[in-house]
Image 1 (cartoon, protein in one colour):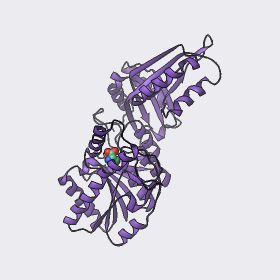
Image 2 (cartoon, helix red, strand yellow):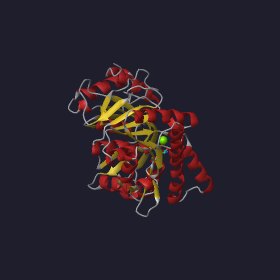
Image 3 (cartoon, protein in one colour):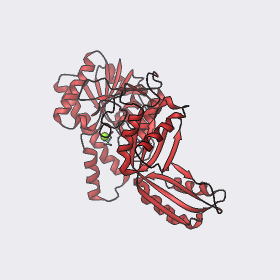
Image 4 (cartoon, helix red, strand yellow):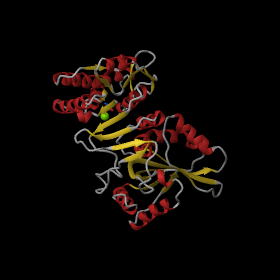
Length: 402
Ligand code: ASP
Ligand code: MG
């Protein structure tokens, strides 16, 4: 079998862990598999490099920042190859340029365009274990780019797709995908399997197990992913197209307390206002999530929407610059909110799920400010202080623990 394995930064944080992972890689290789390994930078290296850049410049040149950040992964792959060498295994480390991983031009947030499998293939044919830098690529100017934080998962999936690998294993410090964050919900349960779509929702909802784009890419190229622990032999969670409907409608609960709500009150009730507001925000690259518009009264209406907390200041600036043109009477901001969502591929056409979720909120005396639904997700906006209580109540009412 051809197996791609990705190890995150904490799994290779120091020499001891590098050797542990090296043994794990060697085990897979010894079983007669072809092995390509993708690594992140050790421990907090990427954060440390960013801090270093900020000591020099508050707003570092983006090309140079990528040049700097990409060195973190380059350290990991070289060290891992040395460790495998010490253990007596044939091994080669490669960076994005050597592999030929081309991306779009945008520094700091590049996307893969193409991966040439030739060099990888050649090394595998020589019976080498191949260790590749995660997180980086090369753009059309032949410059180094990075894929955005957590991007090494995406490198692993892209390589698995390019090589038509049999498996893509993502090793991390948790042993799989859970029905909820186990730090918040004590009796959260590890899922044996989950669909791409569910995983995409959970990833975007703040269950930080996998880089969102890695799941999108896995879905697109039908790469079966396994998320498992680098510390134990536990089986992990398989992410794939369709799952047995062994279980209930809902597969997980996610919470996100890094959001803010903006309300534009008393907007003139004429066509084109919503278009103008959201087009202006979109032009500034501000991601809007839940949108709620009230029915008009006295020829005005109110529009509320949520943005990531990190985008609030920018959104505020856009609104202040445009409020007069939009004819907004009053603007209200609220940062003390959280979004709690249930996700499940099985709930597509089941009206009862929403009612049950709201029942859990009623039982816990939690007030719901906004609601949004999609085919596989129902989200509610509540006070931040209620988030953990809400997640537990929802987890209980859907019996997700068993
Ligand atoms: N080292 C990069 C980061 O910390 C990429 C990764 O870990 O996937 O974001
Ligand atoms: Mg990382």
